[in-house]
Structure formats: C-alpha cells, structure tokens
Length: 159
Image (cartoon, rainbow, N blue to C red; front, side, top):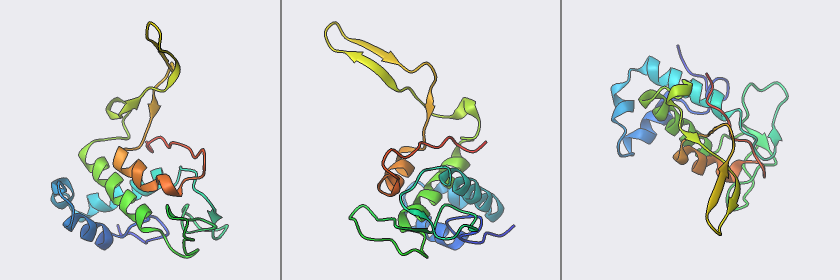
C-alpha cells in the first residue's frame, strides 16, 4: 500500500515522519510500521474531508476536499489553489496519531462532547443536548479551524 498525496491522503508518509521527528510524545507513530501509518493517514484524510472548508474544490473530479480555490488562511492570505495547506497536512498527521493511539472509529472510544442547549445562572441549571456530539481531537480542530467555512461542520470520525 502506498500513499498518493492529493489522491488518497493530504500528507505523504515522508511528510508525516518529518513532522513527528520534531514533535514530542510521538512514540506511537515511530513504533507503528509504515503500513499502519499509511492506513492511519488515509483514515485521517477521509475524516477531514467531511469538514466544510472555505472556498471550493479546485477541480470537480478531484477526490479530496483540498486543494481549494478562494480559501484563505488565519491571516487572510489566499491559499494557492494547487496546494494543500500546511495546517491540513499537520492536522492529518495529528489525527493519524490519534487513530493509532485509540480506535476513534469505535463509538465506545470516542470523546463525547455534550452541547449545552439551555443555561440559567440563577439557581444554576444547565440542559444538554440529548445525544453527544462527536468531535475531532482538540489539536486537530485548532489546526483546521481557520480554514473552515463559517458555521463549518464537525465531522464524525469515519467508521
């Protein structure tokens, strides 16, 4: 199994290895074999493709959500219509690491975030949504947040 960047993954194995070489607490990544790393990168990419990003895909026949036209970064700079932003590459690597650590595709292992529906301060009362909202890991969410469409979705982990 091999990865083709922009076809089945936002990040190549070499890019991810380089990213984790400079990151603390990446033992899970370095202990995994290349086949597991590639599967994790592909699953992470499939999950990130479910988000609602600013701009629009560059080509109607491209298989992934990036590259995009009309997208800007956190500073308002236009992102090259033929590029996958570093933040997306890093988010893919981070999500792949999370997938190697825990089976986030299993509902029993997902981090459940309960959305507050109603809150009253006097005599403190909080009402939560009846079902949990599944969210991406915080590091991943922080990396992609500036690239999301206003009101962008929160993707469920791909089962």
